[in-house]
Image (cartoon, rainbow, N blue to C red; front, side, top):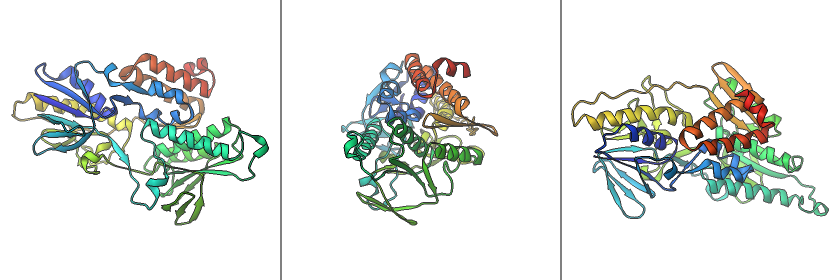
Length: 396
């Protein structure tokens, strides 16, 4: 019996680790991933300001896997009719059961000029490109040579105020203060809908908006981008001249899925032998509730997928009693530069308590699914950013 897991992100890695423990010894288990590393995506924004985070949040999958084989290759197609997976190197892999966890790509919505002129944030190279672009904006203001200082203000625009957009804007605003150019570089955050963090609880939205403004970010909800060129963004409310443009305005399906994010229900099955979770699909849970595309949802859905794969694999073609998944949010966390916002139930936290909670979640995830050394390194870096390491530990 051949079991494939496609994608080594949150969803794919956690399903693989669970299947390593639960599949029959006679089954082969293969994780297929394009990069061969597990990127701790919720910390990717940190690498914009501090490149040292790269070593801690990019974990080789070979360090994590036990029983599973790792195939480093890009998936180009999943043919569910023939149960074959095509790879970019020309190989094909057959499967008896497959878990699709390929994640999503940035959606540019066919907006003219957008993909050509805006930088997304999905990979480590994107974080490096954003950092280089921001440093170039600073240099344009003459801060490398005060005698040539410009009287104009540089403008950096972040399009899309979901969780990623809020975190990018917060990192750039903090970076501007650290470089002592906050008065010379304007950070503008655009959102088509009427609030930042759309789709999240209202108190969480309000707190995130307030913390962004406290960081000096110009937040502009209700702004729709319609085009972009090398110097100007066209919106329904008028043009915006810019020096750097970052786009976090939406997601689309992986190319191997034809760019689509097919819907799965509470059993997380595309068909009897193919399961899917994470950002690769749109999940409607067992209660009929749509599930947000988030790391938290991917992590929590992995248990149901692993259970259902094992149930199907051991049923030997007979009746499969599949489990149904219900999404229950444990709360929400977001970084805003050196600040943070957390919501647990109706309670919203900011500042040191929210930072401590976010650090606790991060260290727990890395210690369980990466390495304890990397977890401690991230915790120390965040403590250095937010104050005293000892004080932060006291909050945990």
